[in-house]
Length: 189
Image (cartoon, rainbow, N blue to C red; front, side, top):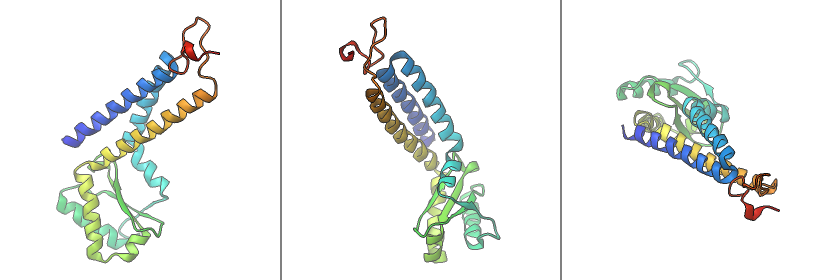
C-alpha cells in the first residue's frame, strides 16, 4: 500500500515539475506542452517500462526448456511467495547482474545475465532470485521505474532549457510579453 502511495506521489511530482519548468521555459505554451509530455511519460513509464528495459538489455525470454535451472528456481520461489509466475529472461552479458521489472506482480519479469548464471551455485541463484521476487512482491520495481523516469525528465528539462537559450528563447513576443523565464523582457534583444 505504501509503494502505491509513493508511486502516485512520484507521478504527481513529475507532472508538477514538468508543468512548472515548462511554464518557466516557454510561458503558457511551454506549460501546456510540458503537461502533455508529463502525461505521456507517466503513461509509458507505467505501462511499457518493463518491455523497454528488457529490450534495452537485449534479453530473451526463456521457458522450462530454454534454461531449466533458472526457470524452475523462479517457479518454485514464486509459488512459495504466493506470487504469480513472472516472465523469466536471460541477458547476453558476462557482467553478473539480475533484476526484476514490471508494474505489478501480475506483469512482472525477472532477468539474469549469462555471467551471473555461470558463476553462482544453485543455492546462490536461489538467494538472488528470492531477492528479486521480494522486489516484485513489495512493488519496489514500479517505484524504481518511476524514480528513473523522474531523473530522465529532469535531464530532459535541462536539455530543453539549454536548447531554448541557444536558439534564442530570450526573444519577446510582438505584444511585448515574454515567453517565460527565457523570454522575459529583460532578455529581449
